[in-house]
Image 1 (cartoon, rainbow, N blue to C red):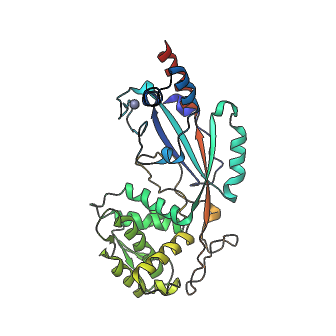
Image 2 (image 1 turned 90 degrees about the horizontal axis):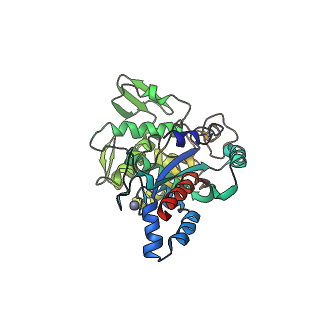
Image 3 (image 1 turned 45 degrees about the vertical axis):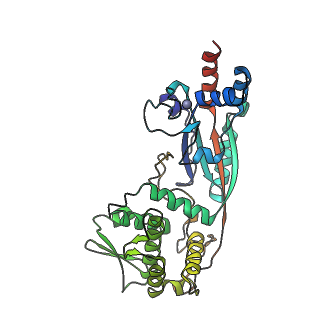
Length: 346
Ligand SMILES: [Zn+2]
């Protein structure tokens, strides 16, 4: 779509990984139908109502679109509800910008450059707590995984490591790796031995926790590099690895341990953008996988609010609230509404 490309926003000022783009199609035939048939409005009134219409953030970013919204990868899609052809479809582009020091200035500068007339762009703000952000990340990763193919275990471990330490070139580290194992030698970091990648116990513990979390929604129990685990088995393993002690989880009951694990994981890494290969109903374009430099839980970062403490101390748990700014591009929608109405009225 040449016209769509031309009007793409310049997001190059944002740190990598802080903006996620969603594209949703809306069927104008369905919208008109809803306004004229179901709500009983005259075509002219329907037109002005439709023009004002803005989907909710959930409708724009949901993976299960409902009438009149839909998603399609096809070049010439037809509306799944009424079969209307492409000229009846309009698209909404939604840019989800993660709030914070790293993006605030760039975001304000971008907003200043946008046209202000006719509600071509809308900004919606939403708070999201760190647990919700973690689950969203897991959820998006899960969509792209083929659980029949065991290589997903490596992929999930790599996705996690990319979050934990964005500075390392993990694609290179994982080249030709066949299995991930817990190291009995290392206390921090990782090492390669042939086709095996050894991780320090605490890192390995989090990697299998991530695998468990991603797969438990799709399979019975969770699948991990340790095999299929129940929650009880998972918590036992993590205790045995010394991980629970290390992060200061003293609970005994698996459910309580699990809750603490989630809080810990959510608060100590930055999960606030979507999985690198985000697909499904959402469209993610050209953004590198790495997180914002300032969010890195790196050894030398003093400014970071996320504590990265020496391995022997329990990590501090901070439940953070992330502000998300949804920038909704309504230009295509407004144009299409106009042209569709012209043919409607004729
Ligand atoms: Zn339709």
